Image (tube, rainbow, N blue to C red; front, side, top):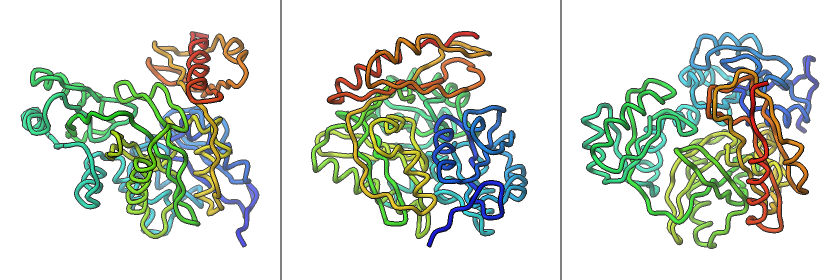
Length: 396
C-alpha cells in the first residue's frame, strides 16, 4: 500500500523543482494537494512556483555543484526538472547514486539538446521527421541549408519558447539567422539545427503520460506558434483516426525510449500532420505550455497528471471538453507588473484568467493566460482570445 506523509515530518514525501515557472507553479499546487513537501529552485527570487512552495532556493540551474549541494541538503524523494537549461550531467550522476530524477536523467539530457533528441528519434527509432542538418559554423549552416532546401528553419540546439529561432527564405538570410541563433541560445553549444520546411495541415501537442499502469494519451491539443512561441491552443483538435493512431504510436515509442524501464511523468510530444501523414517535431519531458488549456478542458490538468504519474498513482480515463487558451503577454520591459481588465475579461461565462505572478518582464514575456470553454472549439477559441485582449500588463 502506498503511503503519503505530512510536510515537515519524517514521513514527508519531498518534490524538488529545478525551474519554477508558471507550469511548475501548477505542479506545486497539485503536489501540495496530496500532502507533498515542495522545494522550488530557480535562478531568480520569487519565481511563480516559489510563491507556493514550502521552501525555495535561488541559484543558476546550470551550476551542477549548487544543484548537488541543494539535493544533498534537502534530500528530495523526487528531483523534477521544469526547464531545459539545467546541468544535466549532474542529474545523470545523481541518478546513478540513487536519487530519482523525473522522468529520467537521460530524458532530461537528451531533450535539452535538439541534436540529441533528433538523432535518437530519426536515426535510432527511425521515425519520420523533417529533413535536417547540424551546423557549427556559418559555412556549415550554408551547406546544411542547401541540403534541406529553402525556406528552412534555423534553431539553436538548445533553446525554448522560440529563443534564437528564425526562418531563412534564401541564402542571403543565413548570416542573420546564424547570429540570431548564437545570441538566443540557452547554452553555448555553438551549434544549430537547420530543418527543411514541411507543408503540414496543422500541428498538435500530444500530451502523453507514462505512469505505473502504462501509457495514456490526452486528446490532441491544436496550437498556433509564432517564431517558435505559442500564441493559442485548443483541445480537442479534430483528427482522422489514422492520423491519431500514427501520432500515438510515435509518441509511445519516443516516450518509452526516454523512460526506459522505470521513468514516468507527462511529456509534450509535438507533431506535424498532413492528411494521414505524421512527422515528429519535438518533445518536452514535462508539462507543455500549449497544455495549459487542460486546466479547463480536462477533468485532470496536465500538471495533475504529471504529479499523479510521479507519485505512482492511477490515471484512468481523461475526459475532455472543448477548451482554449491564449497567453497574456507583456510586450515591453516592466519592473513592477500590474494588470488591468481582468474584471472585464471574466464577465463572459466560461472564461478564466490565470496570472503567473512573475516579478518582472524583460519584454515579450508570458505573464498570464486566458482560458475558456465553449460548445465547440471555435466558440472556446473566440472567448479565450477576447478575454486575453481585455487584460493589459502595465507598470504598477
